[in-house]
Length: 78
Image 1 (tube, rainbow, N blue to C red):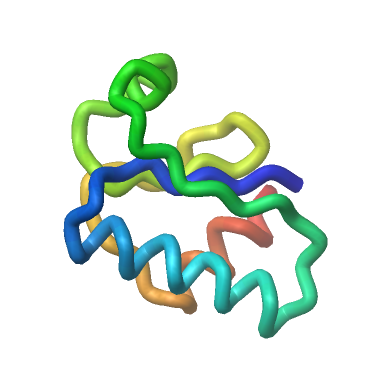
Image 2 (cartoon, one colour):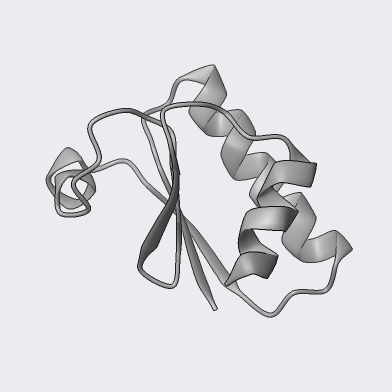
């Protein structure tokens, strides 16, 4: 599984990235987790608000920080 957090260095983007890493670790999910801050790459996903969560190439959430419970639900939907 590939999980991307698209975002700047704002607090909401950073918190979402940290929460994703914690969820993956706590639930022993086999995944590569990355944070993408390059706007050229971000725009390739059609995302105009940050942070955004991408799971295996699918945009799962845009424009608001996510807590761990929401992240787990979105990952498990995949």
